[in-house]
Image (cartoon, rainbow, N blue to C red; front, side, top):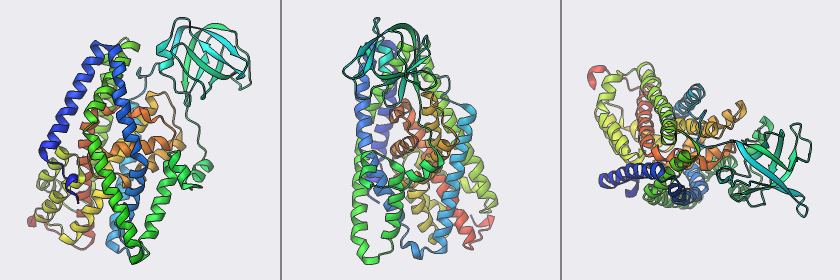
Length: 501
């Protein structure tokens, strides 16, 4: 474990305090100077771009390392199989819980973060014979309308004419115009609209995914094309298979494993360094979000805070239920331990996880506390806990499901049963590739969003409070690790009596 994976208390405190200051300053700027705050969003956009650069390489090498850390897959002993089965099962329980809660509470519904309807917007349509399309223009300079449009995800609906306009993705959207490729009626037939009117709605849609398309998308035809297009799930499949085969070729595979591990450490270091720019990025994103809310929503600042609060409460409720009910039930009835006494002995580990936000930094404390205080055998702890710090991310997986559904709801995008199953599976499998460092869950969240075609820029809506959510989900991740170690220890024959710990 590298030194940089163990954040020093001073560095961790600096990051936490600077993030809090960034959120406060961004909120104040957005509230009192909305036009300037909207321009400050560029700092957040740059931060997100830097984050997106690391997504594909981090996921690929983390997946391969996660598999190779298991050793030769053909010789995976009973202990390894039990551990793997337990961790995948609890992660699946966590994401199902997250999906249920977000469908019940709908934290992103009725959000005004993204205006979609402009009833008073006057428009005119100018034909462009050379391109075969037209341009939708706004005499009253509806800049707010055009600033919310993504041509790859949105189309225009003329309310007064009941006509759909497909945006030309090769054209340029300006503060006063939108290039339209063609106009369609509600049945999908091409039509010519009236050249003037009033009332526009911006519609967002995700392409419906069929079961056959889903299965086909899991198998990469060209791994490099998948990397370019950031088609994440085929990359996961490839890396899991590649890592599995790599463990079976013995000495010849060790040099390549060493190279992949070196790349993994390097990319994680890049993520850690990028996190020091997070305060500037979050300042820009917070200022931009509040500024947009002030300009587009009568409730402004309050609406943005309420929206974030609903999201945070949903995530925290899910983490609380999983940590204090699901895992406690497993500890009581599967591991046959006294939950209150077991937890009391692990308090230093819980506090370390919350303060550092890093599973890797918490690992030494976890091993020490669970072996000395809770009498789990060293053999089990030394195998199960390091593996858990790599692949067991219950809290992260739950958070990814809630965040994905929240972003979809905020953009008024409906995810059907097939899409929700894809989110569930991607979050479960993707948790294997989440590095045990602060904020790494953000990178794998991008993977989950892309799996169902959601806009990755939606991450900007939750970044302002992610520093706090990250510490909570890391606490659940590490708590799940030690509960898992006690379960495996019990079924390895170590029956600890209540008076022994």
